[in-house]
Length: 171
Image (cartoon, rainbow, N blue to C red):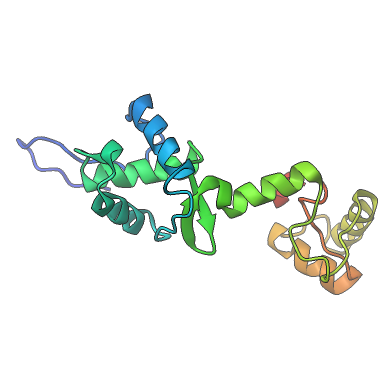
């Protein structure tokens, strides 16, 4: 909810909106920055804290935007533009982020876990084990429990990336 004063200009910015009011030139400059000089950047993990850090940095492509607008920029850079992503609770340029690593592993059908962990289930093993778990659970199984149950019950790692998917729900 928001409260707005009657008779005053409305400058509220919905930082969570999917609407993208930023010109393509801003995104092009941001991409060049995050893929170039700021490729090694570690930014705070929260949208607001990251926006503050970017505003303080004085990046030319964000000049003239309010902090609320920069928060919106950060949200879009994460969710729609894939310029930023999370790595261990911090924001980094997308190519260094956990989602980018998972996408690369999925394309190569490699597990993201180290080789010294449980062996990754093959597609056939995954199918058989999932059927067993679903039968025990009366036809349903919380997605959050799948990996833990595979390790504890079958001594296998359910690796969505080894099966060619970047996200567990897609596997």
